[in-house]
Image 1 (cartoon, one colour):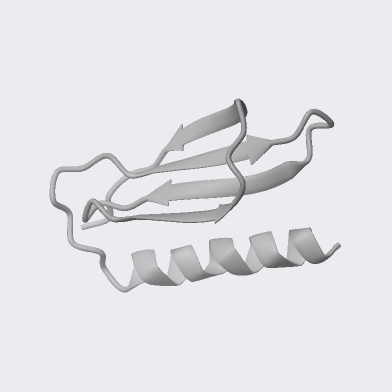
Image 2: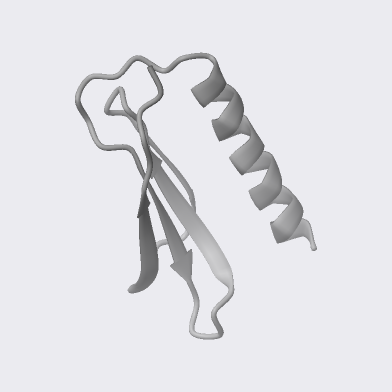
Length: 72
């Protein structure tokens, strides 16, 4: 339950940052979600339009990548 709450908080913070108008520098923003062998989320990496990125938890060989739009 604590992981879900942390993940929800993390996603909400990203939404606030996006709403604040992150400057687009021609980069493709993305969200990588990392999973353990049981399929549970154990980490995340998010790249922004400005080229910076944020990492939470651990990285594994099991992950998905979601590409996100840059908001003007």
